[in-house]
Image: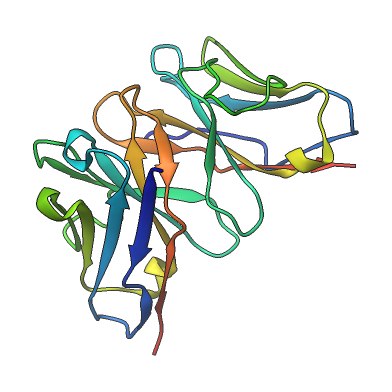
Length: 117
Length: 107
């Protein structure tokens, strides 16, 4: 069974940092591009970042320069390093697998990040 | 930046057909993808490449695209279809864009 399991969320003060992880199983992780998508409470989905199989990275304008996406194929894991966090980053963060036809065909259950003093 | 526009809400009676539009300048040459998100759950892909249905998605879900508008159609809508629906596309490069989402109410 294909699974994505996020972890690392929590409460962090404004200006702080947090590292999210996404553990994957049930497929050959190194063969797939991966995404982070977030959702603030009561709001819509917002694309955050993407990393392709070559390790090339892409970011939304709202996080570029503050967040860093990475992957460790040997551990079948995806990461999101988040720095200079603000209240606007408070959200559920989902990792998602990009299929060969460029949709997001598998999603994790999400991990909650709260930025507050 | 590129945007996809969806109506905030759509209402439909059980058994009727629901249509949820998504408009964006690049939908004429970029595929639309659709996700269903029920309350408290993660999104689920229901349509890919404008009109293709993943395995396990009921046949009552279909998609179409013409010009700059993609449409998700749910035929014979059931109470279990009540959810938020999001369209998604690529901006022509390597950026992903989601529509604002449409809350489907079945009443």
